[in-house]
Length: 159
Image (cartoon, rainbow, N blue to C red):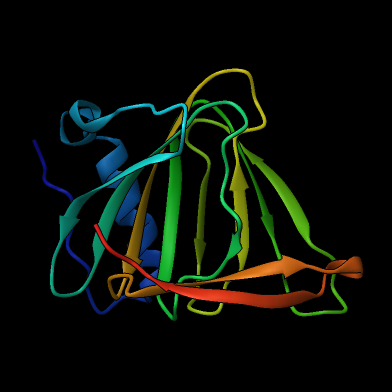
């Protein structure tokens, strides 16, 4: 069996997209880590190297993130079970954009990307995320009328 690729000099978003696809194709690498928690989304780091990290996130119906960025890291994520809805927030005056991502759906993004992800479905969902460099902090935002954002806080990222 092949092993997931490490990041190369390719554009970070393309390399991260390939990395999450490779992890998704190897359920033996992530399925044993799947847990669901009714109180909060479950997340665990699957891999960390000097150049990137890979996370597994689980989502019960109704669970989601706040509107957030990734502290300057580029990223990608793919859905391996269930359905997730992502809303991205481009710079105003552009309006937020919603996308539904079913199994195999993939999003990759650069270091200034702001979004929220929610399980609006009726079944649990599982997703795999990769970031480069590794997350050190994430900033959170309040959505204002018209899609503008107001900074709320920045939190350090810990295991």
